[in-house]
Length: 496
Image (cartoon, rainbow, N blue to C red):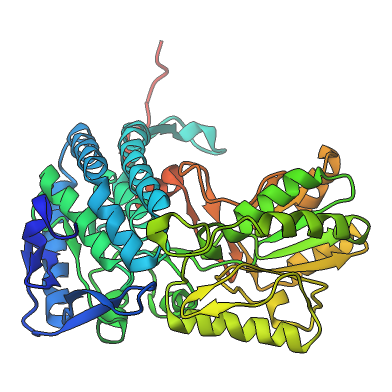
């Protein structure tokens, strides 16, 4: 149960505390923010409504702690990360329970997220030791006009204070994907969790606390984005922002100034299906890619672009699999669970009604109860429909029938998004040519889009973000190059 056992320290009455200076604290504001259970649509938890004054204090201590942490031996940083990973996995059950209640993630998937997060932290520790333990040695006479009188030693040094802002759909995993690289690189970390998912994040942070990280190095502030959001992202003490989410990231990038940004802002991942594709494989991946976690994934299949000659057969195969999806509460491990909020459900419904009005073919009846929306496949979707371009973040999948590969590529590239895409064909030559033509950060061949494994590069183009994620890329992004140049006198004689 949340806030019990080793986690008793993080709750006061019915309100969870925030984390600062190595301690769990209550906000002097005396205010809290309620977290609504998507399934019951009733308040489930409360977290502190931190103020700007508390943010200032967090930043002040983060700057001080970072200076000392940067001097901590690399092996010691790695040792503490491994310890945090083990504690996190040991306490996967209560953290997973929070995910079930806060974001309606199926129970088995919630446990998987926590275990995967522990593995990610350990990998960061190991990869960081390798990457950061190496430097470069350059000599001057490799550039024209220079003698061998200069030697340059380069190494990677931390940026300072990293602000991490994960999204609701993977609040633990996408938090540690930022925390792990930041810490192993010698940075301090300030975490602003999403409201839905904040309690799971607080439990995760307590695992780092139990591991014994220095006070002030890690902080977690909760509260309303309207009150502390801009104050955090524009704070002069922040040296790097790693954000995963939606349109808010655009505003952050415009206000943040000259600091490194790592932004992943969503997608409209296209699935291009050629005539020679294995349609059974395609159908299975469309179900996995389009409907897992009720479609609430940045890398979910968001539009199927299928050649007209095989479209009918593919749609029938997908329809048969949709009929087998279980719908209900996350506690029962159902395939389709409630979407995160009523506003999300209303937005999805708006896309569905627009498609209905403009003549899309409904392969199932549209059904909704509260935040729970039954899976829906829309065939014969046309470019004038909102669902053809907008990201539903729900269990609604449009199918657009195409008459040429070029038509599919054009639709993919006409989108404002460019996160991932996928191609299904038996012809690897065609697959590679289409991949080169698709304006997306990643292209999957004969598989649905996916962010993992977590050490793979992960990046978006256009409105899908800037910077590249993945463990190695994140470590590199959260460091900067430091050069030390040794200048030798020009020899007055020839060395024998």
